[in-house]
Length: 242
Image (cartoon, rainbow, N blue to C red; front, side):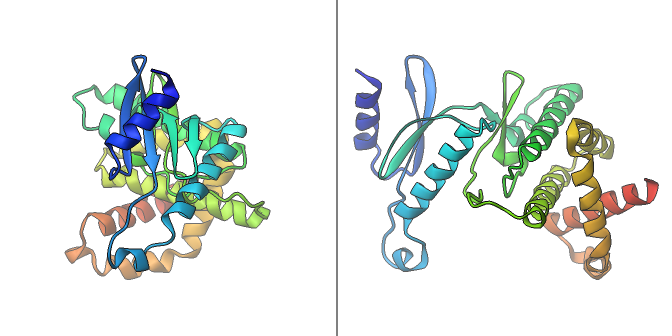
């Protein structure tokens, strides 16, 4: 069977699955198709076909820019297929691997984010679950929030700051040792991200009042809020040291 025939067969056998993997010639692929909504969800959710086409357009744009993402190998009006790009960093950290290996994966991820920013591209939410690592290469997934329109320098810088904050927040959510987080962000800075890091530092310093307000809730805080407080403390402490 040809690749196109396999794709058609997979769609017939999995009509209700939004995203699923399949194997062709011993290689793994992912097929994503229009989400089928029922009942009230049709009123609550945006047109799923338009949403999928928007994501496909973003992926094709990023492929053209040679961004570190999965390559689109087939597509239609209501589906697209991408190559597999390995295991998520979030899952790598759960594996019984050495601390040194985890550090390497995180540093590689930080370097890839810095390189993405140097291409004047942003992800929107580069949490560890949206980054994969395979054969010493890093890839980003789920670019639904990518901006295809040209950004002003100010808008682009704000998007880069958001990327950095989401990335660091996800590091603290994993309850990693502070030295691991420090080395990870050092890798980002050394890979060309120093200006973005300094802008992030200034941004949080400007909004440091939020930290003092949120800190009042620390006795009852859960993981998300605790990670936000740690994020503020990490960045503001480093800003005082620089």
